[in-house]
Length: 455
Image: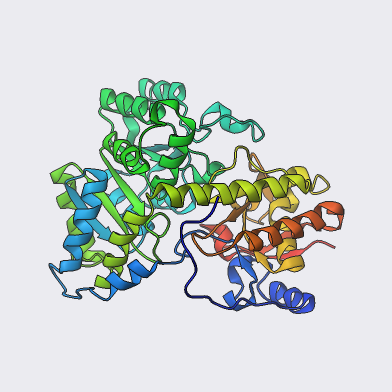
């Protein structure tokens, strides 16, 4: 699929020698998060804030109004978001986790439960920081990484209803649906599942919100995989999805096509007032929320561009092609391919490594050592339960590696290079060694953990 754009500005990338890469990863404590950006050849660590802006976005940025309150840029941003979501109350924030903090502190109380199809890392942490308990209820189909089920991002409706009807039902303070389901292989959520969840929450008078960082990509996969929406445009599908919820929290560093930004969308005026007070005290006045005027302009334009079906089709096709190349090289990925990332089945590729030796992390390190490729582990290092000595007690259900693909940044040739490096690893996987933890923080361990290879 031909991308519906051409490249006008380029940036050089680094090509370190094998010895330079070995020294760099050792100095970083074998944690890719600690590597310098100029030590990376292909950076697939995250799709958050790493995309390329368009000429139209940079043009409107010049119109940015930096007035402290009531800037023209705010009203253009507010109108665009309001038109897309249908929510009457919009609060800007500098990124999604700021929105989570503001929203959760006003929706959740200590001892309550937040239910999700899957909480991602910072969402999980922000729920716990307000004293609530995150509970994941992914659908049963998500457990089969190889199946072609089209909507493995869905929430388990039977499990949700059982929870709400059971003794802990009164403790549920929020149901939060992540679209797409980043923690479970970039899998989409169907409109049927969203609608049924909305009806269930309404019946039990539980607030239902969307974590909609990748709302446009979810809409495209709905367009492709859910027959009832085949003839509906991605923007219309997205608006319909927002309509099922009481509100949303969105990181616009993904489908906002920008390096910074986010928003909280709300229907309830009283909740808006409470969140607005928190926002003003901690993020900035309610017409900028920690963002500059030029950021608001880029975001408003980015929200127009991201729902373009030609753009979404080309991005999805590029990811699918990369998945096929990787699979042909003998490395399994979570099926079917999503859009923003591919998830490698490291546990299957490296069966000689136990979960306690962190095969996902080992594969990620090997990708850097062999090819200068940076990515993120989503296995037992990230999700496993550890004791006070950093020994694995409960492993993650799967040992995965996420290759997150920035928007409008890499060509198919770059992605072919990644597949080629993986193919070389797959020819002799037993040369990949495991790792042990040297030190780790008590929360969000994977960001600042330091490790060393096992001999």
